[in-house]
Length: 216
Image (cartoon, rainbow, N blue to C red; front, side, top):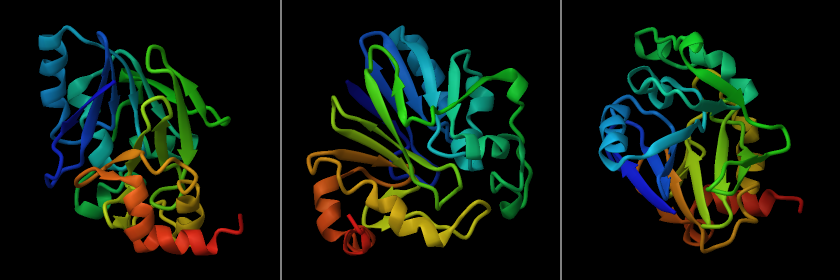
C-alpha cells in the first residue's frame, strides 16, 4: 500500500491518499489539499472508494466541498453533528462559519465494533480516542503497520483539548489505546511530519505518562 501525503509539515492540516492498485482512500480533507487530490486521482486513473475522517474540525473537513466525493465519508457518531455546526467544528472560534452540506455527500458512521473492512485495503482498526474532539479516532492498518493519528498524536506532542468537543481528562486513557500497537508502526499525524511509534513511545512525554498511568 502506497501513502501519498498532501501538505506534510505545512500550516494547514495533512491529508493522506492511500493507494492499492487502482483504488484509493483519503484520510482527512484539509482546507488546501483536496484541490490537489482531485487532479491527482484523475491523472493516475484512481477510484476514490472512501474518505476517512479522524475528526470533524473545520481544517480536516473543509476540503470535502471542493472534492465533492461520490464515495462514503466516514466519521465517528460523536462528531457527525460538527460537520454542519460552526461552533462544534471550531470554525466559529477562528472568526468564520463553515457548514458542510451533508445532503451533498454520503456520510457513514464508523462501526461501534471498531473494525472497518474496505477491500482491497483489508481490515482497518478504528481506535476511538476522544479528547481532541468527542469523536476523534485513530485509524490503524494492521497489514501495513500504518497509523493515521489525526490530532490525537503528533511527533513529540499531542493534540490540544481547549476547542469545542475537547476533554483534557481523557487524554491519557485515549493515548493508552495506542501503546499496544507494534513498535514498527509508522504514524501519520494530522499536522506535522510522520514518525515511528516505537520511538514515540520512548520519547513522547505524553505517551510515557499514559504508560505509567495505564492500569493494564
